[in-house]
Image 1 (tube, helix red, strand yellow):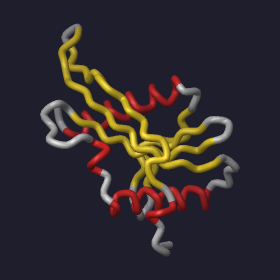
Image 2 (cartoon, rainbow, N blue to C red):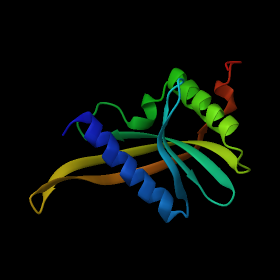
Image 3 (cartoon, rainbow, N blue to C red):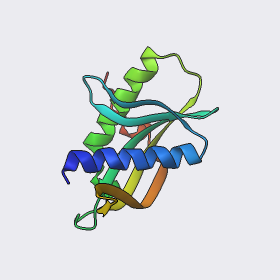
Amino acid sequence: MNIGATGHAGEDAALEAYEKEGFELVTRNYQTRWGEIDLIVKNETDLVFAEVKTRTPQSSIRGAYAMSRAKKQKVFKTALTYLQTFDLVRQPRFDVVDILGHWTIWEGQEIFVADQVHIIKGAFGSEVYDGFI
């Protein structure tokens, strides 16, 4: 399967994990000139900006380790833009969702199976802020 399909399937698995924890989807693939946030989800108290990193067993590095400081800054800038645009009272949180899965054939269809979904809550925050925006 291609990288885009794997990424989208990973986002589906991450969203399912958040929904099991009582979160609901606000938006998916939110884009600004600063970058993109894979998932924005909320519950009664938190607004979570989630970067989803999906890998297959052939990957040489786990997804969570692929989050560079520059990528964190892009997510943070994009989230600030979101927060300035939408007046929400929930506490913002920045998560990284590490997905490990594989593609298989089921009933004649190629599907992605998420073997492991690990939500790293509060993976980063204001420490990546360096005066931008």
